[in-house]
Length: 568
Image 1 (cartoon, rainbow, N blue to C red):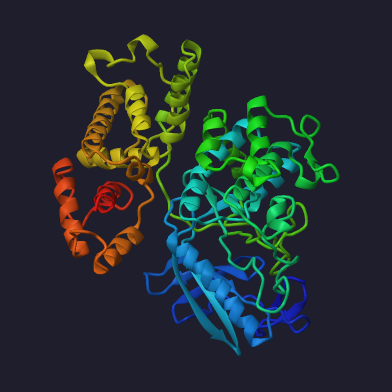
Image 2: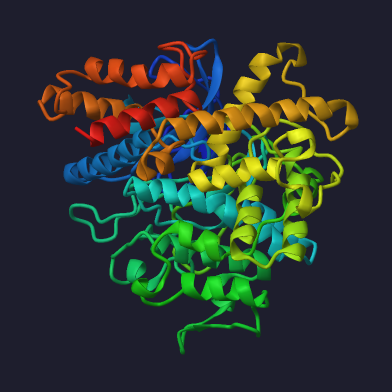
């Protein structure tokens, strides 16, 4: 058996390192790492190592992704620095609990032969990155539509809001670090590698696996303060995201869209978008960080409203030529544009795959919302109603029911209490907006209650057909009751806005504060827990202690606890 390094040097299958350049070679299929993870196939490679589809022998042979970090360094201090950077990535991933970011399981070191290797374990899920979608569009003489890119921005900006809240800056947003997840057609942000920093003694450190050195982001995508000055701000991510969007819309790499001599983008010449979107892009791309948007919510507010057409179009395009189990981990590109990873195992090109949690998919409300926006747009000029339509589209991306034909929407005159006093969906999401809570959390929670009440449905997807009308009304009633209870909880603005982002780290922090005597009357976390349940249980009596869903009712519990901690 013969295997190849990234430089296409031929090696014997029993070698661990390339006999020509010294690069670490791929692990063998069937090889077991850490007495647990059995290599099933190679997925791809990037600036720090490779990723593999692996079988976890300790979890009923469940598949996962094993990301290998194999630095080809000699000096002990460089190896220590490499290990530090790897552990930094692991520590960042441990903090993140978001449906659109890969879920982290473990990190460990293993000695293979005479060298140390480091590994991360993450969820595995099939999906195709936007670089791959971009390349396919190019081969067809096409590019992404403005509507598709607007949808992408609406779906990924809340993710940036989440990581920025944790004081995490991604620093490497580009088409190859965004995955279109097959399970729900949502974009997933990948690659939080910590190896894009200076080592202890080697200038800009690089691995032998990298085609180019790894700096703080990709030239063309990263702003100047990041590449030239080594400074990074939260809105540096907005700059990179805007460049990514321009590349997808125009079908051209960044170096063809930017006049480096005059320091301006080719607006009108190479970049043709609507005036409203152009204004958003210009602010995201401002040279001075102080002149850019400061928060993701500000970008979302200024964006044109999303549509529901583009994502299915993307998936249909890609399903014509699927590439399962193929991935590309690319954090190393420095030159403008995106260069393909070197071929492996006989020249098979590797694309990006991500490993993330599956979450519910939007559906029967999507076409409804489009009609709602059109109706309110025609009949109302108030900015508040326009914002409502915008919010509703973004907010209902998690109801598990199928896409259907656009339903008939009642006129604005009938949107008060609905027919026979029944609350309309417009009113439901108007209240969601007024409460300023996560719409993804909200719809997930309503789904949980609704399908628990209707087990005979077996989570069947609702349709817009007349036979499902009563079920849709019941869904609205559940939503209305949830909103009533949330209002009764009298949560602070801060607590409400964080719903959907709470994690076990919050309870661990409160536990530490209690042990340090810094939680007022709460002498232990158990005291806080008991007091929180006293408020929570009367509002949600059907939810059992110790059995709250992390993505739904436990988020409300955390919000209540957060306010109690704040008031102590």
